[in-house]
Length: 597
Image 1 (cartoon, rainbow, N blue to C red):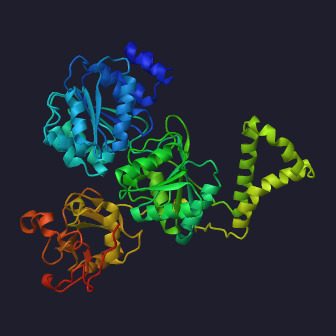
Image 2 (image 1 turned 90 degrees about the vertical axis):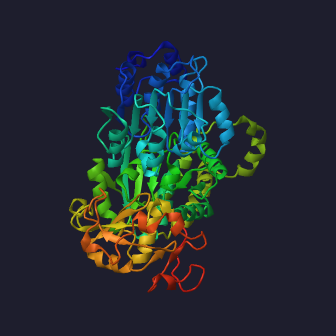
Image 3 (image 1 turned 120 degrees about the horizontal axis):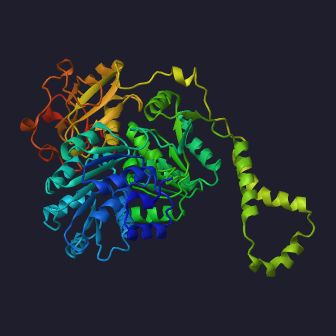
């Protein structure tokens, strides 16, 4: 059995490991730490979240830097404020016996002046989010021109969040001869391109298989009608009384709505999405970590970087469009050697997505039945029995026992048990006694379901809107659906770039999509769409076959997005018009308005 002593770590780090109570290294630590300690090399390490990646790069970096030098020698980029703070805290614990060590966290939402002061004191290691790091480099508040080591942690997450250009800009200020260590849970093509551009013959360490789900997580799915999705969520929660979960929704609006309904129905729930202020987010996360919140309803973007121990379940209230996103969702549970469960609530039309997930993740999804009302009553009853059994007696109650005995002396032991348990049982029984069966049948075996993927059965479209139009993929998907009148499952594989995007629909909808986008404006800008020659997610040049009159606007013709776009009040989706000068303003009554996400 491998031990930390066998990895080549110095005594002061072994002492810190002993203080932390670590017993044996995880697989990623066993494979990564000896290589990084013995060689000056670039490395790509692929491993699921929760497998100990921070220690895998943290210990080698701490052992290799010179704490006598006050110059920044190591840079760690991470996607979110929470993860940035977490990495910083862990590195300080790992290096608690390194006298003079200074690790500084740089992230948005905090005083940039105070962070600059900490850097100026001499920070050997800087842990940063890309946006704040780029800002501080631009203001010359941090110098990374002499760093020896650079870590890109959760690289796929950073790229999904649109940080490619920021990362490129940041790394342009670092020396070419540094060692770059890239850590990622999945390996989409964007991560591979980062490796090729910024790394020199990197070693590759893979834990399990690329893009494969963690072995510590089991996957279950429940099929219901769309209108019963929320009721199914409540029953799954009631059937798991000890649930401590993250519930994922696709949009901010759905996240807020589901959280509000759960709170109204008496559940300890809260919403986590991009419209929250940093202070609100901090309050929610503090309550979740302390388990005052049992169900955290979150969007994928807002949940990135969350690292909370002992999450029992991840609930996919709505499935994401991207396989990588599902991998990150399910990776929130089953961490640090523990097991977890990923629950998926689907409609019949989404059954094909389960097959696609099984194929990519190489995991079996077990079809389960949404519990009936009486099954839930039974679960809650025995949960109460075990809770009573495990409760430690508080002897401060002894003084009150004589009066309690006087009140209850006329009841037998059996009658008392019935009364105690009836308090909880009756509550659930009254709610569920007339509850209907939420499960729906599906015709045929799951193996016979046709997978909708990047195939001949779908058409790939190019559209001249992207992240610079303040559209993430979820927002763009809703916009496309509103314009085309297609269902939520009929627009898929939406990929947003900075100034353009791609999406897929069934071939049968191609003409409908092209017709729907004729002379439609967004931010006072003509939306232009073309059929891409590539049906996959490789980008690809648009096909002339699908080219609308006027072609798509390039930078020379269109200018910047800011110049073309209107104000916040004017920038909502506008309806069709015959000529640009005749199109209705968003503030009037003649235009079709897009709902705010």
